[in-house]
Length: 168
Image (cartoon, rainbow, N blue to C red; front, side, top):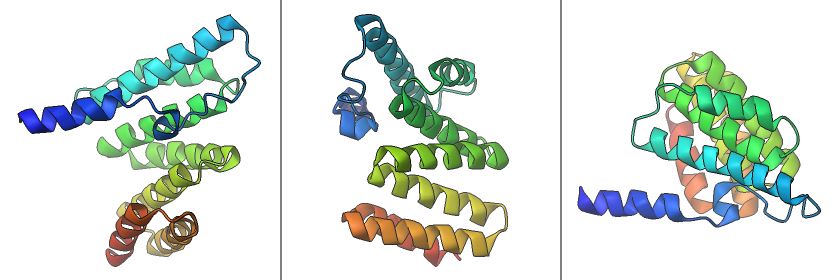
C-alpha cells in the first residue's frame, strides 16, 4: 500500500502543464485576475482527478460547476475538466453522458493540438462504443486513435489501443 500511495502521490504532484493537458503559455496576455481564475480551475481539475483516482468522487457537482464557469475562456482547462468528468461518468457506468464528455474533450484537445490527449480520448470513445454495443463505431474510432498514436510516437497509447481493438 505504501508504494502505491507514493506512486499516486507523485502522480498528483506532477505539475508539468504538458502532463496536465494545460498550456501555461496560452493566454499569456491575461490579467492577474484571469491568471488566478485559471489557476483556480486547474486546482479544481486536479482535486477532482485526485478524488476520482482514489474512488472517492461520487458527486461531481463541483466539477460540473467549474465546467460551466470556465466556459470557453480557458479551453485547455475546459478540455481537462471534461476529460476528468468523462472518466468519472464512465466509471459510474453512465456511458451516454460519458460519451458526450469524451467527444467534447477530444474535440478541444484536437483544436489545442494536444495530440496525446486526443489519442487517449479517441481510445476512450472507442471503448465506450464497445460497451454500448456499437462495434463498427468502436473499430473506426479505435483505428483513428491507433493511427494518431503512431504518428505522434505514443507507444504506450498504441499498446492500449491495440488491446482495445483486440476486444472487438
